[in-house]
Image (cartoon, rainbow, N blue to C red; front, side, top):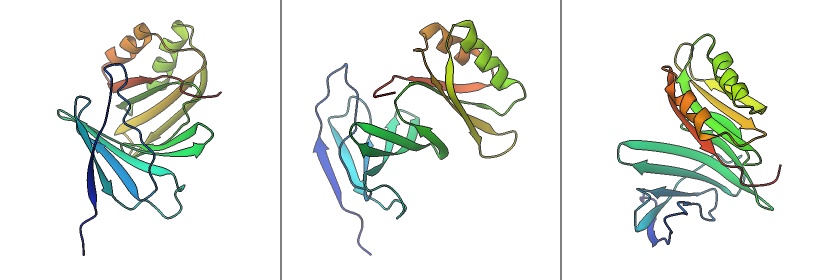
Length: 173
């Protein structure tokens, strides 16, 4: 069997724009080794037949950190991220979003939502998934207001939170 085709393509990026998204088909993937990389590697791969035709799997590596995302361009400027690091999600970019991974622990949702309430941040949607009881829980919180840095720092300071990211609103909603 032949190895999938690979192509290395130079990308232009300013220091303010670290976006690595590019138009692809469901049989394509893009891997960016670091934000300072001069090129990205595209590898042909297979994504489920039922996937939207404009679906892409993006693998990103920076130092010892790795992340994988599966998402689709739905047209008219709309996107849908369906998976992050193996966790099922529904991120549209229509709202300000907080993504975090934490230990599956009693009371963690109450504490996290309490911090957001203390910062006057209203929750539009909250989705939680886990792979196993007592393992890691993956939380996606879409907010009406943009979460401030202080709220993010308080979430990161919780001893059971492994990591958290704020994703800006990028479209509609």
